[in-house]
View 1 (cartoon, rainbow, N blue to C red):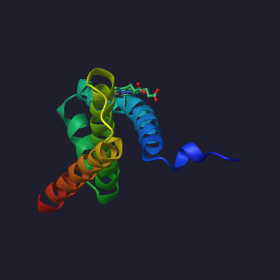
View 2: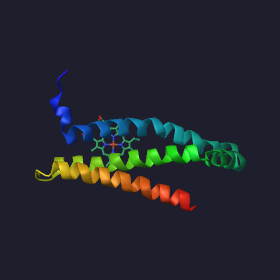
View 3: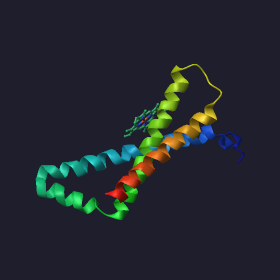
View 4: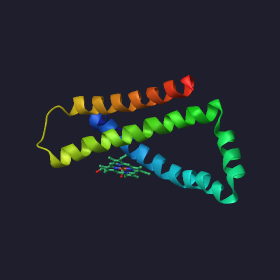
Length: 115
Ligand code: HEM
């Protein structure tokens, strides 16, 4: 199938925005469930938090931070497209959004490994 539009960075920005938006939406109920363990008392919440204290969960959390930062930076870029005068520097804006997402993930990782 011929899909030349997919060669443009803006298409990949769209794909990342959709995938990250959907992934964040799936995460929200999981997050509420985790916070909801507090209803059963301090010990239940502490037990859940202790369970999350392992490398695999930290790795997944890093992915989540990258997705949230990518969605936020990409969302701000889209809002700029919508509300500001048109700029031809869309590739630069896509690259800057990707940079923000990667920087957020790295900052999170440095913080995890320093703790
Ligand atoms: C962090 C700040 C956020 C900003 C600046 C932001 C911005 C945006 C924007 C501008 C759109 C419209 C995209 C378009 O017109 O194509 C959008 C779509 C969407 N957002 Fe967010 N958003 C944020 C946080 C979130 C969060 C926390 C979630 C989920 C829990 C989420 C889920 C979604 C979903 C599912 C879509 C639809 C994606 C699509 O149809 O392609 N967003 N967001």
